[in-house]
Length: 294
Image (cartoon, rainbow, N blue to C red):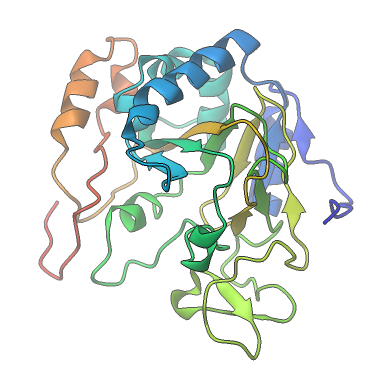
């Protein structure tokens, strides 16, 4: 599918802070060109390979996500001191104090998707989850108002398992793509008249393939719907991302700070400590209950 023609600009230089924030708030996404240097990109690629590569145990697993990547990757942690990124992160949060919300690294081998798509792993979805018991750590962190900041270190194209988004899908009153209905909880959508199974096809009306180069930054809001192409390229697709929430945000019931997160916080320099003092880490086994306590 060719890129849809949008009537507005969504690619910006790192210094265009106001335009970036306006686009993200109005349309649910923005792309910042060449936020990272080639040298930093190569170091982050090596880090994704080092941290996630050993997790592959057999040839049938083609994609692995590490939901606590920054805790194991000192190169990723260096981004907390990278002024252009931190200026942008602060501006996206109204120039108020911010806290590291979460991070992730993804290692996707050629051929990823395929059968996995049938299980909904790569289906269209929003990262936002309703806080309805029992909910997990994803719902807690993705209800914090923190936009996702993603670096596709090997670039993002429809050929190499890149991202696609639906512009303007980030608002509470978005009615969904034409000819589709929402699954329960609005987590995904499916063609009208079919089984309510999250849709994996990359032909959704109004979708925009995200085409970026290594070093570009992709920003999207919590509720922006996005999908992932099957990886038909020859090189592993490596990516990493993080998000920051307002330090004033109250997460509500959650898990105790993980031991890995505690070590990460203690290892941060005094100059960066204010960015991680409220960091919780990620506990994928935690589930809420009506009596959950922070």
